[in-house]
Image 1 (cartoon, rainbow, N blue to C red):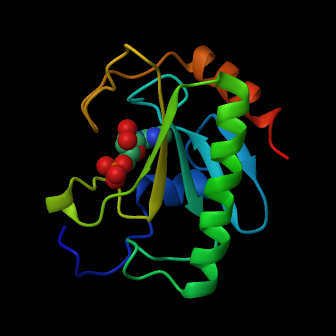
Image 2: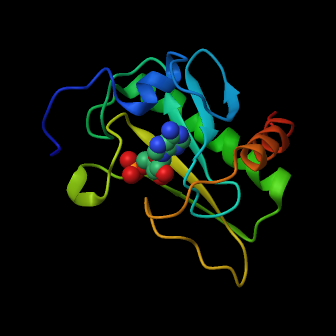
Image 3: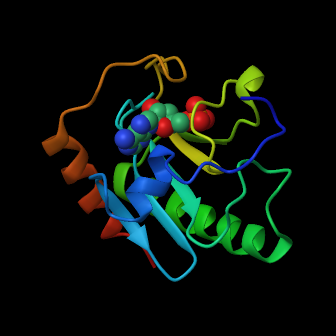
Length: 145
Ligand code: AMP
Protein backbone atom coordinates (compact mmCIF):
# COMPACT_ATOMS: atom_id res chain seq x y z
CA UNK A 1 0.00 0.00 0.00
CA UNK A 2 1.29 3.44 -0.86
CA UNK A 3 1.01 6.59 1.22
CA UNK A 4 -2.31 7.28 -0.47
CA UNK A 5 -5.36 5.17 0.27
CA UNK A 6 -8.23 4.48 2.60
CA UNK A 7 -7.98 3.22 6.17
CA UNK A 8 -8.80 -0.49 6.26
CA UNK A 9 -10.98 -1.34 9.22
CA UNK A 10 -9.80 -4.94 9.30
CA UNK A 11 -6.10 -4.22 9.73
CA UNK A 12 -4.41 -6.18 12.53
CA UNK A 13 -4.19 -3.29 14.97
CA UNK A 14 -7.84 -2.31 14.45
CA UNK A 15 -8.74 -5.90 15.32
CA UNK A 16 -6.55 -5.77 18.42
CA UNK A 17 -8.20 -2.50 19.49
CA UNK A 18 -11.65 -4.08 19.05
CA UNK A 19 -10.56 -7.11 21.07
CA UNK A 20 -10.92 -9.43 18.08
CA UNK A 21 -7.26 -10.49 18.22
CA UNK A 22 -5.20 -11.17 21.36
CA UNK A 23 -2.26 -9.07 22.45
CA UNK A 24 0.04 -8.59 25.42
CA UNK A 25 -1.33 -5.27 26.61
CA UNK A 26 1.01 -2.85 28.35
CA UNK A 27 -1.11 0.24 28.81
CA UNK A 28 -4.39 1.81 27.81
CA UNK A 29 -6.18 5.08 28.49
CA UNK A 30 -8.94 6.88 26.61
CA UNK A 31 -6.58 7.89 23.82
CA UNK A 32 -3.76 5.38 23.37
CA UNK A 33 -3.13 1.65 23.53
CA UNK A 34 0.27 0.00 23.97
CA UNK A 35 1.09 -3.67 23.47
CA UNK A 36 4.05 -5.94 22.88
CA UNK A 37 5.25 -6.51 19.31
CA UNK A 38 4.89 -10.24 18.62
CA UNK A 39 7.92 -10.21 16.31
CA UNK A 40 10.18 -8.17 18.59
CA UNK A 41 13.38 -6.61 17.32
CA UNK A 42 14.68 -6.66 20.89
CA UNK A 43 13.52 -7.64 24.36
CA UNK A 44 10.73 -5.26 25.33
CA UNK A 45 9.71 -4.03 21.86
CA UNK A 46 6.41 -2.17 22.40
CA UNK A 47 3.96 -0.65 19.92
CA UNK A 48 1.81 2.39 20.73
CA UNK A 49 -1.30 3.31 18.71
CA UNK A 50 -4.05 5.90 18.87
CA UNK A 51 -7.43 4.50 19.89
CA UNK A 52 -9.37 7.34 18.31
CA UNK A 53 -7.63 8.24 15.06
CA UNK A 54 -8.04 6.32 11.82
CA UNK A 55 -4.78 7.70 10.45
CA UNK A 56 -2.72 5.18 8.54
CA UNK A 57 0.46 7.17 9.00
CA UNK A 58 2.03 10.28 10.51
CA UNK A 59 0.94 12.44 7.60
CA UNK A 60 -2.74 11.79 8.24
CA UNK A 61 -3.17 12.05 11.98
CA UNK A 62 -5.14 14.92 13.47
CA UNK A 63 -2.97 17.31 15.55
CA UNK A 64 -4.72 16.69 18.85
CA UNK A 65 -4.65 12.92 18.43
CA UNK A 66 -0.95 13.16 17.59
CA UNK A 67 -0.24 15.15 20.74
CA UNK A 68 -1.99 12.57 22.88
CA UNK A 69 -0.30 9.71 21.04
CA UNK A 70 3.22 11.07 21.39
CA UNK A 71 2.63 11.78 25.07
CA UNK A 72 1.57 8.15 25.41
CA UNK A 73 4.72 7.08 23.58
CA UNK A 74 6.85 9.08 26.01
CA UNK A 75 5.02 7.60 28.97
CA UNK A 76 5.49 4.01 27.78
CA UNK A 77 9.10 4.70 26.79
CA UNK A 78 9.82 5.93 30.31
CA UNK A 79 8.15 2.84 31.77
CA UNK A 80 10.18 0.59 29.46
CA UNK A 81 13.36 2.29 30.62
CA UNK A 82 12.39 1.85 34.27
CA UNK A 83 11.36 -1.79 33.85
CA UNK A 84 14.12 -3.13 31.62
CA UNK A 85 17.04 -0.72 32.15
CA UNK A 86 18.20 -0.83 28.53
CA UNK A 87 21.26 1.14 27.43
CA UNK A 88 19.25 3.00 24.79
CA UNK A 89 15.76 3.24 23.35
CA UNK A 90 14.93 3.61 19.67
CA UNK A 91 11.54 5.22 19.02
CA UNK A 92 10.49 5.02 15.39
CA UNK A 93 7.65 4.68 12.92
CA UNK A 94 7.31 4.00 9.18
CA UNK A 95 5.12 5.69 6.59
CA UNK A 96 4.09 3.69 3.53
CA UNK A 97 5.10 0.27 2.29
CA UNK A 98 8.18 1.68 0.59
CA UNK A 99 9.41 2.88 3.98
CA UNK A 100 8.84 -0.57 5.46
CA UNK A 101 5.39 -0.09 6.98
CA UNK A 102 3.46 -3.36 7.11
CA UNK A 103 0.42 -2.48 9.26
CA UNK A 104 -1.52 0.57 8.12
CA UNK A 105 -2.77 1.96 11.41
CA UNK A 106 -0.29 4.59 12.59
CA UNK A 107 1.95 3.23 15.34
CA UNK A 108 5.19 4.04 17.09
CA UNK A 109 7.78 1.39 17.88
CA UNK A 110 9.66 1.53 21.19
CA UNK A 111 12.71 -0.70 20.78
CA UNK A 112 15.09 -1.07 23.74
CA UNK A 113 18.78 -1.20 22.86
CA UNK A 114 21.19 -3.28 24.95
CA UNK A 115 24.95 -2.82 24.74
CA UNK A 116 26.53 -5.58 22.69
CA UNK A 117 23.19 -7.01 21.52
CA UNK A 118 22.24 -6.47 17.88
CA UNK A 119 18.69 -5.27 17.22
CA UNK A 120 16.74 -7.61 14.95
CA UNK A 121 15.65 -6.56 11.50
CA UNK A 122 12.33 -4.79 11.13
CA UNK A 123 9.40 -7.17 10.49
CA UNK A 124 11.73 -10.10 9.90
CA UNK A 125 12.17 -11.70 13.31
CA UNK A 126 10.59 -14.81 14.77
CA UNK A 127 7.46 -14.82 16.85
CA UNK A 128 8.07 -14.33 20.57
CA UNK A 129 6.88 -16.70 23.27
CA UNK A 130 3.48 -15.51 24.49
CA UNK A 131 4.32 -16.13 28.14
CA UNK A 132 7.51 -14.11 27.88
CA UNK A 133 5.66 -11.24 26.20
CA UNK A 134 3.03 -11.29 28.94
CA UNK A 135 5.75 -11.05 31.59
CA UNK A 136 7.45 -8.16 29.82
CA UNK A 137 4.11 -6.37 29.40
CA UNK A 138 3.43 -6.79 33.11
CA UNK A 139 6.86 -5.49 34.09
CA UNK A 140 6.52 -2.43 31.87
CA UNK A 141 2.92 -1.79 32.94
CA UNK A 142 4.04 -1.79 36.58
CA UNK A 143 6.30 1.19 35.82
CA UNK A 144 3.67 3.34 34.10
CA UNK A 145 3.25 6.61 36.00
P1 AMP B 1 5.32 -1.69 10.70
O1 AMP B 1 6.06 -2.64 9.81
O2 AMP B 1 6.07 -0.47 11.08
O3 AMP B 1 3.95 -1.41 10.12
O4 AMP B 1 5.14 -2.44 12.08
C1 AMP B 1 4.20 -3.43 12.29
C2 AMP B 1 4.68 -4.20 13.48
O5 AMP B 1 3.61 -4.98 13.94
C3 AMP B 1 5.84 -5.15 13.19
O6 AMP B 1 6.94 -4.82 14.03
C4 AMP B 1 5.26 -6.53 13.51
O7 AMP B 1 6.20 -7.35 14.14
C5 AMP B 1 4.11 -6.19 14.43
N1 AMP B 1 3.00 -7.11 14.44
C6 AMP B 1 2.42 -7.74 13.40
N2 AMP B 1 1.37 -8.47 13.81
C7 AMP B 1 1.25 -8.26 15.15
C8 AMP B 1 0.36 -8.72 16.16
N3 AMP B 1 -0.65 -9.55 15.88
N4 AMP B 1 0.55 -8.31 17.43
C9 AMP B 1 1.59 -7.48 17.73
N5 AMP B 1 2.45 -7.00 16.82
C10 AMP B 1 2.31 -7.39 15.55
